[in-house]
Length: 288
Image (cartoon, rainbow, N blue to C red):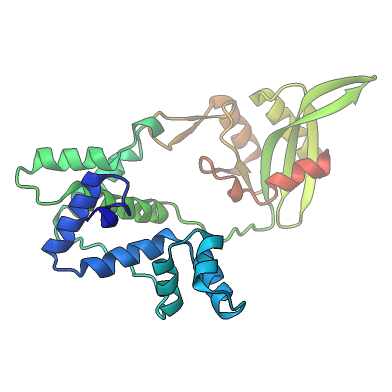
């Protein structure tokens, strides 16, 4: 018994493991040997077999060089099956009746602060509070919650290929450093890009207020002799406000007056989605 217990880290954990094996009527000697194999990396097992078969070393010499017991080396030499045991699939038949509740909790979670997101332990406690005879273990809830959350967020945020029509433009601010009369200054670069044709126009300002953006767009419109049909903007605080706990955008009056004066359509990017702007990374490099 003592020799078998050395494969674990604690006596109690090994005892529980062996009792579990006895309950399931598993060959303990076979399982312990499998656990011993797992302790050694496949690289080490491969090296032991190379030393024996390719270099012709004796077992006792291999044991001295690798610090592995003689019995283990003999078993590695005789070993023919190197396949790993596949993990058991999650049996979620017990928790499936509660899937709708978990999805509803995830929907509520989307509008909360990131530090107040649900954990598997919290979901487990909530389900136990709501259902007195809740039959699932914490392990089952945790595995199912992790899988459900991954699927939920992958479906809630789909990515599609970007398509830009002629006449559509993108406007954004970026930081730039420039030299004026020998003095290095920090400024803000307003860029208006046309992804369809890769055309790009820039204006430099000392600030990035709404007035600066609208004045820069006006200058570019006058230079072009026309106005884009539709324009994409970032969620800049100077022109748009996002309602708390929602994704609803509310453009301010100054920006709406400018938009209606020049009569163009507007589109705001999703939060934390820079991939929606086709030329965003490249345009500042070109202008700089």
